[in-house]
Length: 259
Image 1: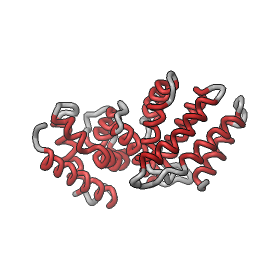
Image 2: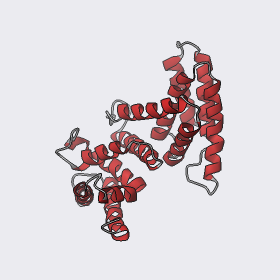
Image 3: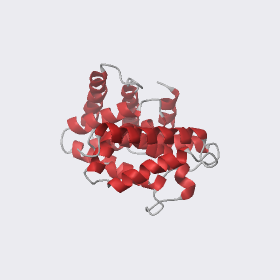
Image 4: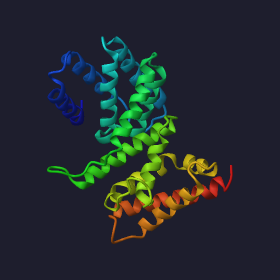
């Protein structure tokens, strides 16, 4: 078990040691982490088989608990925290999440899907800001990873696209709710993550009117403007913005102006 997982379990014990059945659910969380450690950071040719091997024991563990609903809550915490800050790849974690939702028995599958949506909504109150012991770069990386995880879930047909719109608008639309100029350093690279994961689909959706073609154009030109703003954004953010702009322009050329 890697250092991230060990630290997660130490924090778990600190937070939940006094809860009923704490030992049982600690072992459950420990086993979930051990299963997730088997995930690749990059997708191998046998990725689907690996996702099945990881998700199946987690499903069995949830269904064997005296209170499966508690297990669902702890699984969500592990998945989101792993996506945000562990070495595990966000795409692999999203694929496992999709398999859990698809293959858990009712009503657990519906509860997990609703829980993922609720958890996402709560986390979109962020991004977290740096405090004692953390740097702004760490906070930005976590926010980008969260967005990438949710983008991958959306790619796998989770109904979470609204969160992509919120991030892209927070990056480039001063009229949008939640827009803050001082937070763009978080939202621009997070918006680029959505384009990286889901850009072609977003462009096709824009051709159908959701999001509008005007939004697509605003976002694209927003990335271009950031890529040229040498005195405002750090170099890595400008580079990500340039890559997103290039990708969006290439999609327009390869997919065309209509479906």
